[in-house]
Amino acid sequence: MEMSLDALKPRNKIHLSFDIDALDIYVAPSTGTPVRGGLTLTEGLYITEALNVTGRLQGLDIAEFNPTLGTEDDLESTLNTTMQIIRKACTDREGKLSGVKENVTNLSKELNKK
Image 1 (tube, rainbow, N blue to C red):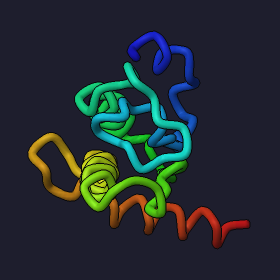
Image 2 (cartoon, rainbow, N blue to C red):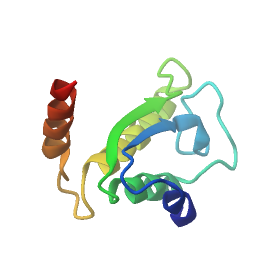
Image 3 (cartoon, one colour):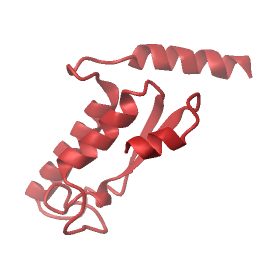
Image 4 (cartoon, rainbow, N blue to C red):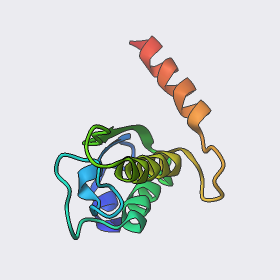
């Protein structure tokens, strides 16, 4: 992860597109392409946190979550996993909202300049 972050220009903003199907089927079964042996939830959260703590994470989208697939338990598991990823992208290491308001304000200012 550190090598990937080092390869990015330090001033570039980051948009994370997180495909839920990259995670193991055990933690994200409600997807069209479930993967045995995919990333663990811990690994997915680590990636998200590593990007967040750079202070450059400006956007997040979650892809490949399909609530119409699987059982009720599958849906609950995938939704819980998805919410943990979103929470990790929006909070600091203590679990408090980290700069979300500031990032939205800064983005609004940048858009108004154009």
